[in-house]
Amino acid sequence: MSLTQVLGATGSASPAGPGPCASAPVSVNGHDGLLLCDTDSERAVTWSDGGSTFTLISYDPHHTAVSAGELQRVANSVRVTAPASQSN
Image (cartoon, rainbow, N blue to C red; front, side, top):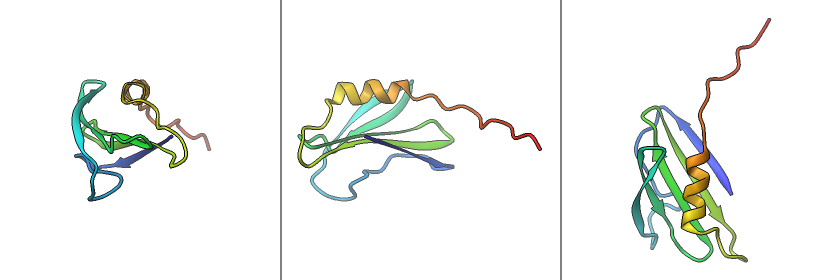
């Protein structure tokens, strides 16, 4: 499973690019998102919080991907915090 954050980006895009991946609307922490690539070996959810776009991917060509419900549960557990201040 991997999580990508793109700062300053808004909207959703398929991590696999164009292809046979279907999408379905989901809500992640109150933000609109999309469940993408809902296949046996790949599932992804992407959402934007208005400041960043996040994509969480479960992919393994040799094993079954986590369920859509489990992937959304993990996405809902993501918390964005400010970076720790650095002391000089």
